[in-house]
Length: 419
Ligand code: AMP
Ligand code: MG
Image 1: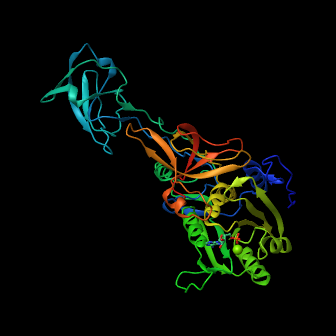
Image 2: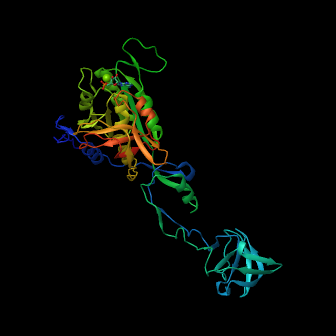
Image 3: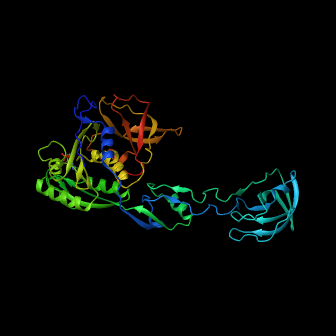
């Protein structure tokens, strides 16, 4: 695959040679094509999988005209003024159709979902009917054809019901079941491997020596990946040593479609990720005019996609959400879902300089009038993971924005369950 040369951009006068967020997104999109591995799965085990075939309706849904109400099936032509009588000659239940003949002036009792007799085209709700033995008297205004669900009104035989590339939701499971389809051809799950880099990192259960911290990035990554339908391969912590990194990257790339690392992509003396990636594969290293999450390495090792995320815990989550998640969606074959953005009033003042895109952590809430507004979580340092924990959205402040006065309309990206 061709290597990208980061092009100078005017994204930020203070940070020459940096890409804008949308340029970086575009470059990743250009590089990713959907996996071709597919498999057949039972319907019930296909939730959150991506369809690899169109679902075409083999039948009409509903398969027959049926009653939308509990009441009486009549000849519409018998409707006469706002009070008329008919003779009841039978009953139809859901699953037990009436098999006799219904002449003009006659009707049957019919339950919701029961098949309409051929002769009848109209259902009168039982609330509008007075019953005296087999004679029923109908009151009120009625319209021919009312309260009947027509065959094929939901889906017609031969319709494309869902397209390849659609991710199966609970509603889809029901929809597909209503067609009588028990097996689906779906894309296989992606395999995503990740490890943290840093000599200072210790895993949970280990004793912290001076200068050491617990590794939190593997936990946030594990959490975010768990909300996507992927196989997760956690490869632990890797030291800031070239050989250790080389081996870890080789090992990871051999077993995964995507490898994620955190840390070691800056310009510090122990930041070897970029160098190792250059040796093993192809690398684009970007400074992105964004905050947080400025450095990002992206590339390939053989057929495996690689994302070297920054080390700071908030930067990891922001870059995952903005770049890795959409790439995983593309790779999984899922059609790009609509971005869920909202415009709401921000009650906090926000200081910002023009030039880079900021993803401030925000809290969407409802004021006393029930109107949705947003405020910032306060301190926005890229190491302050608590700000992600209490936030439920990003406040998107684009390159041009140079600060927000209280009560200004801002664009907000709700976390929608992933973070
Ligand atoms: P680096 O990009 O490797 O220089 O890391 C930037 C900052 O993020 C440093 O303060 C690191 O200690 C911190 N950091 C890196 N990786 C992790 C991690 N897995 N968990 C928590 N903090 C981390
Ligand atoms: Mg480091």
